[in-house]
Length: 256
Image (cartoon, rainbow, N blue to C red):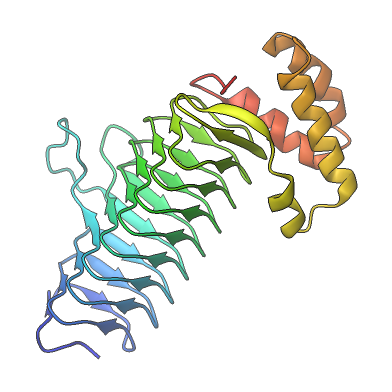
């Protein structure tokens, strides 16, 4: 299932049913799991591990060296889970020795054309990166987050689960779970209620999340005061616990 015009390193490890299209290049230290499809003109360099049932469209560049001037050829990694789709011209870089040395992508994610995931990023499950999303290094993205087209994310930024970033947003601060942001610079615009309904959140849970959002963004409280009010609520409501825990772990301050 390897096209005769493809180049596959003898040191690469491919499952027996992997498909490799014409003119693609698979380098050494690459492992590819079952039923994964590598389209034409794709380059995969290593050390890179790719799980099962992934699909890579033409001109994607996967697992190449990080775009970091401090990088000196250290043996860093790219780890990709299962059932991800990488559309045309996506670029996904390996990690650097200045962090954990790993760029990590979970399962069931969609990366549309020209999306870029930089070194040392950590992407959860079921995310969507629309066309031309550009991420700096060390970014963390939670499960079910959606990033609209042309979104730009500053390095070290964190994006919480179920967050929604409107097209063209320029993000330099952390986005809590459930929150919608848009603009340059990105600012909050409410709770991603429709997305939460689609994922099985009850009306009561969404109401609780909206109440927490109002405490954080509409009550004129300082951040420490808002956390003081939300923490007792989080002990009884798991959906608010995720919200509070994220705020405690924020390192770049929150979008406000």
